[in-house]
Image (tube, one colour):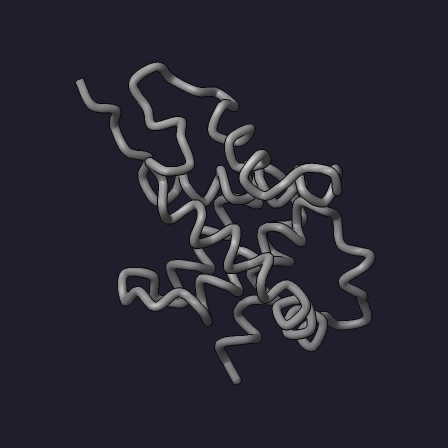
Length: 144
């Protein structure tokens, strides 16, 4: 019996978990962090191998490869704030959304979908103020 694939929202969650791990533990490789994320809340019939989830690798490795550029873009849209002061989870969510908005060559991820997904991730993983903050930062990017 083959394993079920993760849906896009689940893959985004795993990407956030991976990015968060990598900010906390510089010794981890991206592959180890992805494997760890896939094991969090793993269900027996769900894919738990990085090879089974190519979009996860595309997101994580793409974000890591353009991290400085993404952070600079985020910084340009922060008002009276610095990227270095953002919580690690909010930064991971913003990086994911920015990458999906501007670098994923997939018409199935319109900018508004990337923003909505980021807001939903913020509701799950951050504090009550984060969804509005993340929406404001990302919305200002697409207004340009």
